[in-house]
Each structure stands twice: as structure tokens, then as C-alpha cells.
Image (cartoon, rainbow, N blue to C red; front, side, top):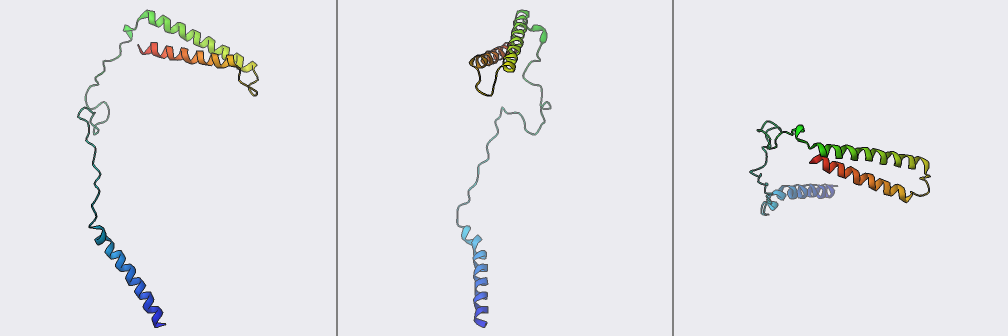
Length: 125
């Protein structure tokens, strides 16, 4: 019995010694310092919420300066987009989509996508 106590006490003392010596052993290793990125001098100040750090560089959008010719083109494209979408909807209601997607439906969807991108680019200016 005394020998088992001695062995148990030796184990506890050894474990405590290892745990106590760990910081001393690691003190000789070089410490890795993670460099902090430098903020850009042109970046907005992170300490201020948007709008409080001064006026924006963008001039306010003036809706009166939009070219009327471009407006008519956008309206015509939107009307065509609406018609194409309605045709595609009619085709999907009539077709059996469980077997295979018809090629003309895929082409119509591509036309719609292309027209939508064109409208987006026209409206940007």
C-alpha cells in the first residue's frame, strides 16, 4: 500500500512539474507577432458612420438630364421584354417539362436575359 501511494504521489509531482516548467520552456521560443495592416490614407474613416465624414464625391443624380431618345429606347426594350416573358410563360404552360426542356424555350430565356442586360446598361447611362 505505501508503495502505491508513493507511485501516485510521484506521478502527481511529475505532472505538476511538467505543467509548471512549460512556460519556462516556451519562453525561449521566438514569439510570432502578426503585423497589423496599415489603413489606406484614401480610405474613409472607419470611426464615422457613412454620411457623417463629409460630402460624397458623387454629384447628385439629375433625372432631368436623361436623354429622351434613350428613354424611348428603354421603354421599347421593356415592352419587348414583357412580350418575350409572356411567350415563355405560355410555352412552359403548354410543354411537358418532366421529360426534356425544349431548345426553343432555352433560346427564348437567353434572349430575355440578353435584353434584360441591355436594359440595365442603357439605364446606367
